[in-house]
Image (cartoon, rainbow, N blue to C red; front, side, top):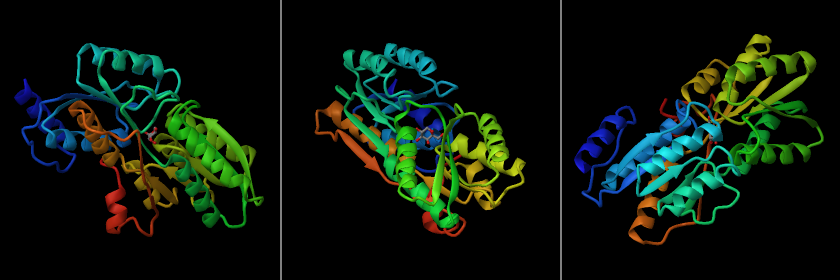
Length: 315
Ligand code: T6T
């Protein structure tokens, strides 16, 4: 079974671009549950997970629901628990409502590592690994200050409330905006990870407040939708967009001048750190309760540099 598992890992790793060689290892069975499938952020994290699992001689099964939704992630988690992995890496889609379903895993003796998003209560969790999301929100506001130095109205496009990552981003952004009286934060509009909804909301917001100078989109799907909305309003380049994440759609919008800055996270590192923590816990070695990873601000200026290219996601 270990050999078949490794073959599956090798096949899945195609397109991830790399990965060390299996070291024999302990044959641990790992599972990674994404926040949502088909998201370049989690795809890139999956590459890091696969690379690290391969190096540790572990197998990994990657699963996720088709929407970023705790009611859909819970049954995915339950079926993974039923398959009895040694450890689960999971990005909980809600900081509160995923606590109980995840407790079922820890109660069953499965080691759990939280990757990207976290829970309000992390008792029993091996490690929580996430970007500096509050710092990223602050950095997004600083980028808007540079792009629209005269100040004005700003708008935030977010997935939904209750998610640790994007809540921290909106909070960091709002606190920074409040500290500069030249700007008025019109507040947060929730788009449920739907780019079409984000586009519609942005178009409507620009009709109501044509003097909006900047938009902060807290994640990949919001940024894609905000770019469409600004384009539809014919305000490309006039209304500045700063988005979290650096998938191929966002990079295209950066190149064509619709998005001005991307806060690229380090999903691959979150994935490899996640596997390392899980394997350490399984071996009875010391683990780190929280790990914070960094981000790179990608603009047209550094996009083609080594640093800019390394920051881009893998799909
Ligand atoms: O921004 C990432 C992730 O950090 C967040 O928790 C959910 O959205 C993304 O996956 C991007 O779509």
